[in-house]
Image 1 (tube, rainbow, N blue to C red):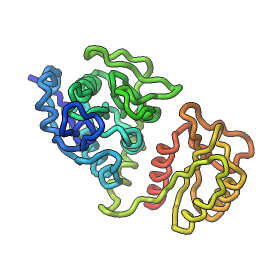
Image 2 (image 1 turned 60 degrees about the horizontal axis):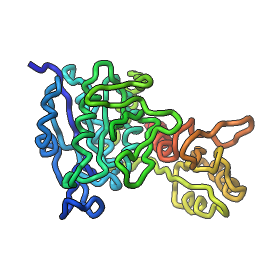
Image 3 (image 1 turned 90 degrees about the vertical axis):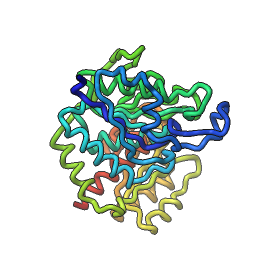
Length: 320
């Protein structure tokens, strides 16, 4: 008898997508197949040492991911993690915003059990879909003894939530962990780990999930926008955002977080007016290295989109 459970939560995405023709990997519609159907179509999943449960949390193309779904997903993940018999959780998700959802869940839950996001670059109706293997690999990670934290699994590679980024528009191996490197690989159902799992901090996680849970359904989350530095950036967009009530700004600078002098002047004005500002880099690899005298705080190694999530959560916590 299987006395441990793996819970598979569906949110939609390409992995649940369908196209009119099997050879069409571009003109498909995401989020059409229910999670129950995806699981039933993979008899090999029953080979796991754990009992499988599935639940549909959302059914969206991940480009349309929103705070309401994040809130519901965090609550369902927290609910299942609290069950002693649950070994781990798998979440099927679209690739477009997977890295943001992964970081969000790691930030608010910091789980001591594995929470594995997986995905597909081809729809379920493709001639050679990649979703089934990704699901099998994700279940292998979720059932692995000692696994913990939020990770992403795609094309046999295990990425940590803090480092993972989508770096390619089309290839099956679309994700990278940058210069941090992946956590490991799934090879024929077995894990080969290269570094440690993300650590857990129970007290911090409990406080964070209470903040999310106590916010009313439909209550707007703090508004944080991303502004990019580039040749000729003059800051007019920042002034418009401030006038429109933005509460936080992440500035994706060039190189080591450098900003055009005109943009920097306007960003400093916004900070003086009470807007929370964080400085990241638009570079794919590396991080902003702070130096003495910096007026704008750096993103602590987070990419612009993840720095935005972190700043929203910080503002949300300060409101409670």
